[in-house]
Image (cartoon, rainbow, N blue to C red; front, side, top):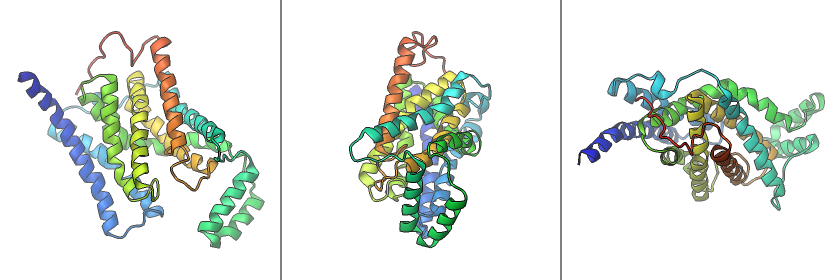
Length: 315
């Protein structure tokens, strides 16, 4: 009986955090829809960015005013850089490259592999969606010929280190900061819980057509699978780096590379291109498998398969 009561007391902050997060994030979506907002345009993208901040705000409110506990140590706001940060920064690019290989090997899928193909797909997209801008595009391409499309991967990497990192940190303070400190369970249990809560939180973005268009049900399954598959990778980064900032570095870089994936796999079905589409999901699962094998057989200090219990994070 005492054990059950203790568990319930530990879960109360988690429940309160998630309720506040959902009320804030889903409330933004509801208000935007009530105002007649368009998810396809820039305003929809702006609301999607704003939707990241209720996660941090809920974590800060519960940890600070409610629990009256410190923020820096439990949340992992640690700027001490180690090798895990390099993995966090480059792993999204590796996932994208694997996803491109998956798309290239899958019958019927196309991957842009030359500058001419890149220009042609961009021209076709503008002709279909913004025909009034086609002449300006042709003039710009003629005077400023683009580099090879694969250079977009290298160009996206610095974005993950700067602006996108700050945006991703707004979410990661909650998912891999607050929850990491308050969920006193094992690696896989925490990864499962956080991944599920994260995926459910993103369901309004699917229901409104922002991520997968009209494919609401298969899109919901994809976003849940995406979050569940990424969660162990981010949990591994969180433990190895000792910092939630490294997790934000991974997320911010992945956000930048998602746009690149849409350009390099110009499929009309939004369920296909990386990183959110099924090609990205396959690449994430392959990366997770490789990471687990490394942790099991080669890591000097295993995170997943450690022989001694992991120290509890201060909460």
